[in-house]
Length: 324
Image (cartoon, rainbow, N blue to C red):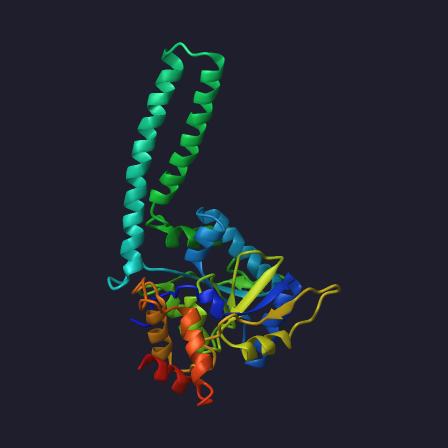
């Protein structure tokens, strides 16, 4: 259960390193890998994120991974399985939203058809014709958005097609900088658990995912790449110490703008019990239980922590006191 959910407003609990250049980012990844005595500077990538943030086209995703490896990094792409946890309210909610969008797209298509018939069959003034053309254009844009929203996020054979595109690019061969893209991994259920485990057993330096749930569930040891730009990069973690350590490996470019930004409400920092982290996520609202505890969110939990920690230095004791 506690390995399959996101958290509402989880970004507020994250410390950030902002405005890293690609060279600075690469120096961090290599430095961390060397410090942990890893054979390869490996990043594990949530392919589902790329589908929404980069492109829904297989070829574009493969090219993105190939380019990412160009800096001498080892990239391990991970895809979700088609099986979705039945306990996740968010899964059912998204399915319902797609069905709703499909119905709305059908209605809009009929409206456009009626207006086009008027345009061709009725006697209209120049102004009326102009207004009608504009209305048709607006409805068409709205219809296309609904059509996109109604589609399933991935094609059924996406994983196999991605593997084929990477082979065509020779992405698995070690490039001149020493990087490569590894074989596509299909997770047993969702990519999140696999990615978290890769960090915990030190098989990867960091993850690429804009979902706050991965660094939240993995623990303070996890660094996540938050975004898809390969020129202006942001890293996040629930731990300030973890990012300060990452910053110590930066080889700064001339005119570097990289900076560490403090979390607004770092409620997960120093919480080492993953089950306790998961309980906090349930209270704040997550994919398993979207509403969360009524009247309680990250800001409320943070406020309670600041009050209770005056009587205890142990964050886990403080949080358990709040939850009970």
